[in-house]
Amino acid sequence: MELSYFVIMKRPFSVTLIGYLFMVAGAAGIIYHVSELSEIATQPNVIWVLVVRLLAIVSGLFALRGANWARWFLVAWIVYHVILSLSHSTAELAMHGALTIVVSIALFHKGANAYFVGKR
Image (cartoon, rainbow, N blue to C red; front, side, top):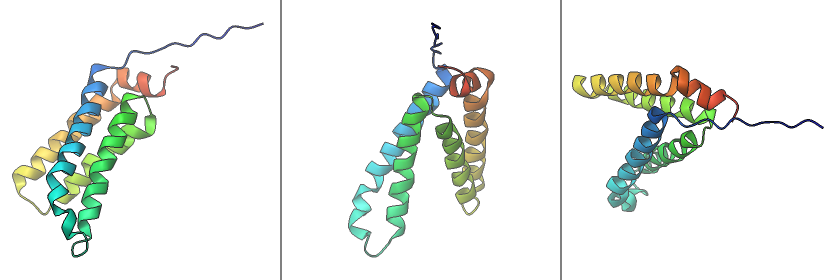
């Protein structure tokens, strides 16, 4: 009879921080846009904004749980905002670009890689 051992990895602080930040950003965005819910009939893009915010919350939660797809989604989420920033100010583009670099490093450094794809 063979016993299998499971190694439980401690979540890196960077993953915890990014996960919670995305969850807070998503919730804050939903709260901010809740006043626009009455405009859904005339402005369907409001639904898209709310879905994107909800996806930030869901992927932040699953990143905390170690789901590998969630970290990729968080990076895609912030890259999407870089693309949106192309039509905004240079400062906003630079901020989103810098955030993309920080989020990518936080979610793909050696410890984070071990957490997301290692044995747990």
